[in-house]
Length: 359
Ligand SMILES: O=C(O)CCC(=O)C(=O)O
Ligand SMILES: [Fe+2]
Image (cartoon, rainbow, N blue to C red):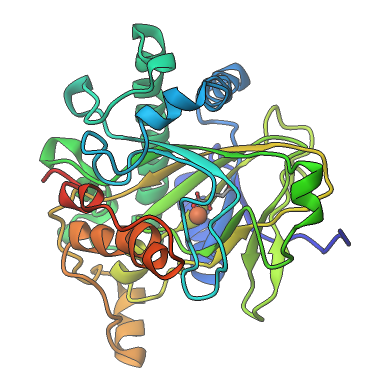
């Protein structure tokens, strides 16, 4: 594959003072919708993340029966949780000829420490379940820090909630949310698959994320993520952008989802991205993603920010669902429902929608 120049995304160093980085990260969210967040200062070690990737590998290398038992859409796997096998997801329903070349395993929240879904039998032991709860909590904290910086960067007045404006709407004590932790696995192509490769195929087709923000962990030597730049060209997201090569592990990739874009009247960009594949490159790819969502009952009112107010005056309000939960339901239908019917695949599964978020 000819190598294209990587996207020139801002790199945020969380060890710098809040006032300085709040502006930097907010500007990045407005311009690109994607930024890197350097791992230094987050309070976890490389071994901690390695442990998460080990869990992912353990699951994806389980027998087919183990995966099938926790397949997405079963009545005990609400809200898009569980395993989605190769081809199950159609992220770009308008253009895609076939489902994505990937597998995913999604863990919804663990309210009160209990899973609201069936845990795969290979991970259904106290140690692995405890680790999953821990990763949920740790990644959630990273997102809360970023959302606090956005509230500062958007200059939300103190009397409206100030730096807590977003985080208070993500407070688990106020109800459940669509936040979820996802292991992704993009297996190497067999020679046969490489030969019959359809050049329009990708590992994850172009899409935007549903929630407020997404954080993504990548592994060295496993590229593929690309963002659509303002000129409508795909640009790779480097694993180690310039200046971070010596870091213990790659910086986190943070991107804005649809909900935060709605909330900010389009000021923050929910940027289209995808995972491309070189069918002849002999490598598996793993990634770990945490999708942050507000509490399901949260109303998607306009953020009280002077920056957002200005956009509202200039462009008018953007279309959106009324609550966070309504939005997630409609996006789940896009990915798992209508497209499958059109492609002649599995029917939409009511179980996915019926209890997407138990609010
Ligand atoms: O695996 C990746 O790098 C990106 C995955 C992604 O965009 C998603 O799951 O929404
Ligand atoms: Fe995504």
